[in-house]
Picture 1 (cartoon, rainbow, N blue to C red):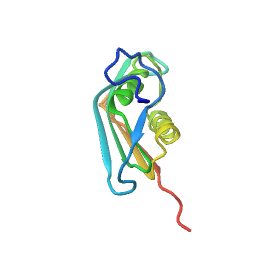
Picture 2 (picture 1 turned 60 degrees about the horizontal axis):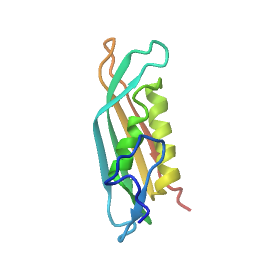
Picture 3 (picture 1 turned 90 degrees about the horizontal axis):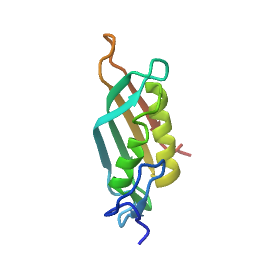
Picture 4 (picture 1 turned 135 degrees about the horizontal axis):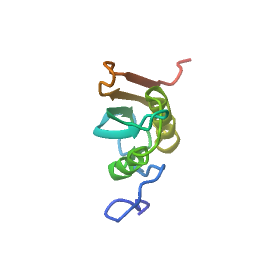
Length: 126
């Protein structure tokens, strides 16, 4: 009922839709985006990456089309590789509110260097 993007002609936006999880804390979900693009914030040149989001859902699971549209918003945006992992992770926590979450961005080689960055959220124990 609250899923407005699935099955509709939706535009990319920085929001994520969720649906109820019937097994909170019992599953781990991996989302793999193998065709991510953004731009270098200084040169404007395109950068290509793979993104892996691994999370343990609590009350909600992210709807995959909204995730695709969310990632598409970065296509023409200039962003540092390391900042991207943090930005996606924080947004994911805001919208999905999982029990645990890791976002790994794996950028393709550019100038002889490939950069991977990982953002991790795990609740503190105690």
